[in-house]
Image (cartoon, rainbow, N blue to C red; front, side, top):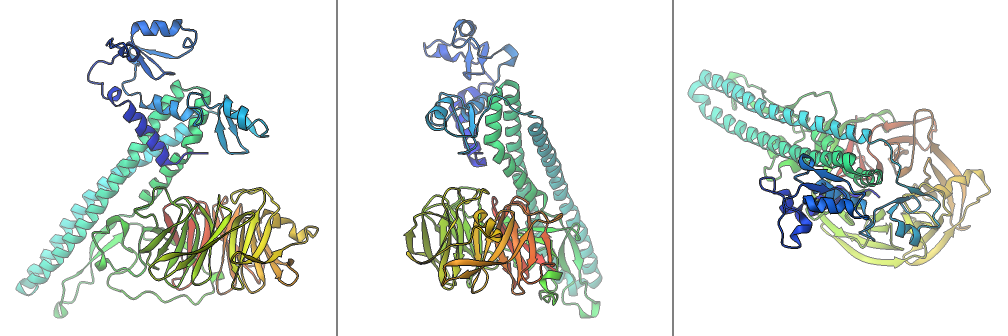
Amino acid sequence: MATSLQEHIQCQETSTENNENKCHRKKGPIFCEPCQYDESFEEATGFCVTCSEYLCQTCCRDHKRNKVTRIHSLLKNDDIPADITPFTTIKKLSTCKIHPNIDIAYECEDHEALVCVFCFTESHRKCENVHDLGDVVSADWYVNAIAALQERIHLLIAKKYEQQKTIEVEQQKVKINIQCLVTEWKDHITGLGNDIETQLSKMSLTQTTQIIESIDRCKAVENEIERNKTLIETLIKYGTKRQIAVVFRRTNHAHVNLKDQLQILECQRQRNFSLMNVNKLDMLTSIADLHLEDEGKDSIDILEHASDEMDDTLYSEDKKMERILQTSFDVSNPVGKQRSSKPFSDRESGQKITLFKIKTETDTNTCGICAVKLTEYGVLVADHRNQKLKLFSRQFDLICEHSLPGQPVDMCFDGTSAYVCYSDLKKVTKHKVTENAILNELEFPTRLQPISLTVFDSRLMILFVTKENFDSTAADNVHIEIRRGSSIDATMSYNSDDESFNYVEDAKQISVFGESSVVFSENWQVSCYTVDIQAGKLTDRQWFYKLHDNSILKKAKGVAKDSEGNIYICGENSNNVHQASSTNHRLNRVIIPRCDRPVCIAVDEQKDRLIIGCRIGDYLQAYSFK
């Protein structure tokens, strides 16, 4: 129901373009728009908020005399806006897409739609949850939120400028130290001194470039915050209650997106120059090593598009912000640390976070990662919002991407091929995954709407719904099939009179863990059932995990399993990830307490990390074990 940030920006840009002349008349007189139709140029003395038009004195008088326009709000003299973009944007956001001249008046929760009186009469009269938008809650929260964002971005920009100056100061300090060493060893180390200065200049240039680019990004976010602030101030001052309700709903996602962008910028660390490993004079082959060190070593590191195996000396300038260096990796020690011998149930995760950017140049929307699988060739990702499969290396370099016929909601991988189901298509597609390409193999239609699928005994187990959609938390009469392509091998039933099967109807995702075990994500819990292929039914519940005490689990989604039998569960609405043992019910915990709407997860034991995909965002999140 809420529009995307890009859609919101396009709306304002369109309004700006349509009123280009009006917005640029600050230096000259503003003329009455109705009079210009008669080729008469009368200077405007008023502005109609409802019509978004400049009016002269005569037209203002006629506006008040006319019965239709009498109730319109007019601004006079000094209150006349020089830029009418906020007014036209509010008007566009407040009107119905189907009936452009009619204001939106109702919200239909059944269809998650904002509708006008005509839409209500034509399509929503029988809907049970339709609300009049004439009443609206206070806008104070939204105003305060925008103000908080504005304050944060101002502080962040000031900090970035300070960091830029610090780089210059530190560069000079290091140069002085270098020159002291060069002077002490005279001709013998003059060449080495020049080498280290060159290296310093390159690193300094790289860091300065990154800071400048970060400042540019901050300013872009600042401009968008200012733009939203102007829109909201205008809306609160001149908009109707209904317009306020509609505009808030349509711009809510834009506000969330700004917070996401700002959080990423705030997490970028300042890296300081220093001299390390200064050699003894009798063993001098180089005078020192340059090292970049994060401020606040003990805090969580959030890195963008980094590689666990990357050395500072391998940095490529053409990648720029697409590859922030692995700052915790000591340049003088290229050998990685040994894996811990402790079991996963005794190890912590979340102390070190790495963000891997998966948005590509051809993406038009913010990514929405609905599935992530580890393959022989790397990491396979299903992007819901951009309708793509993407294959990345284990260092998260893009290998290839493949367009899909719709928005994927789940994906499974059998070792050679990926199977995909969609939010709006009654079919399943199969795609061959090779070392450098993703290829179409086949597709087959389904009678019901598939919402999740998994590989079961070299075949495909598919979860269907009959009424609800993949994103709903409501119970549904779910349907389960085991297929070999378009051929149905078995239809699974379950004993609905057995209390242990009560929550199967809540299932919105399915996974297979073992030869005859299937796991359902059932909103408030996950359950593992035994599958009897011969009888074509689920026979008993082996175990289940649900919210308890402070371990809140809401809207359970993606599930993964490690080699030790631990189960990892994404709680989309509880914003966390749980770890539970499939063999010992006492061993369970929230392993990642703060994660923004996680929906899928993979356990990368080769690199000791959890890879998590979230509902909205351009980054995969890797949480390292320790």
